Length: 194
Image 1 (cartoon, one colour):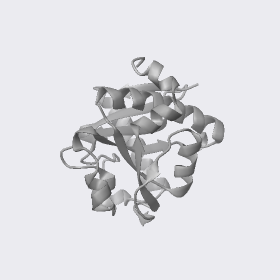
Image 2 (tube, helix red, strand yellow):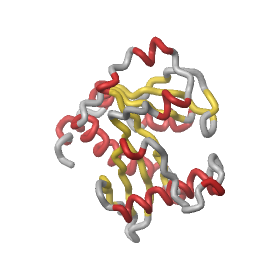
Image 3 (cartoon, rainbow, N blue to C red):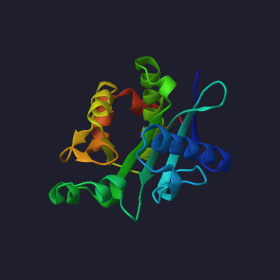
């Protein structure tokens, strides 16, 4: 049903991802003003420190995207844009920190069955690269409903700050790799499969 790809050097596919993100963020969610994206591509300063992943449907249309930012010298979107207690922020070893962001699923696939399938497969990809890059914790900025949904799908983030305005009401969160492994023991067997 879906084809999942870790996007490395495919410039055309990257363009499709950035166009999809622009449609979601500007046209659907109206978080960003479309006038600021005259080329129709939503790219930010963290993309150059990211691994991009995409799910394509049978027509090769983008169904979902996610990225893993790691070893970013400019910090991470959650810590740079949200209030997090300094004691919590300083407790993370910068060499082992990342962020999972730009998790978008096309409207027609936002149902329990498809979303679960997409998240489960993305989780395998993400875990493989989390381990390769020695990431122990990953930030995320999550809406309350998505936080609960990811918990059901065994991506058990912890809230590390108050509910804040950041493209809608979101919590700054952290996902410990050790918790991900504990909740998903099958990932330990599959980490080198991708």
